[in-house]
Structures are given as C-alpha cells and as structure tokens.
Length: 82
Image (cartoon, rainbow, N blue to C red; front, top):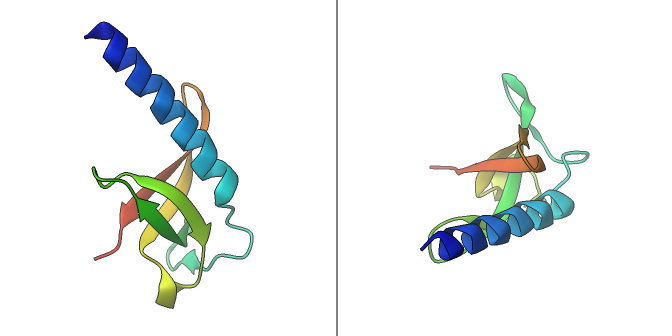
C-alpha cells in the first residue's frame, strides 16, 4: 500500500508540474477582487482533478486558478467554477 501511495504522490507531482507548465497567467483575465487568481479552461481526469489548464477569459473559463508554493515546488491550485 505504501508503494501505491508513493507512486500516486510521484504521479501527482508530475501532473502538477505539467499543469504549471501549461498555464501562465500572463494573458488570462484576473479574477475581480483577487489579483493572484486567474481564469483558466482545464481538462479533468475521472476523479475531477485538473490535468491541463490553459489561460482564458472569464466567458470561456471552467476553473479559477492560482499558483501555490508546495513541498515539491510551484503548483497550480484550481477550483471549478459553478
């Protein structure tokens, strides 16, 4: 079981790295009232975890994202828009 958890953690770290590489807030619309968050359109896996996010405008966004500092480096934290 510990091997599976370690494998999942490693896969998650790679996924976070890939997501960070594909989303950059340079041209994304900022979220009003919160300059650290931006709109993004994200593909999700079967568990609902964002896999690939691209910056977008508010009209086409599926998620609101922001960069966060994690134990393995810079990560991307996204929540689905309602």
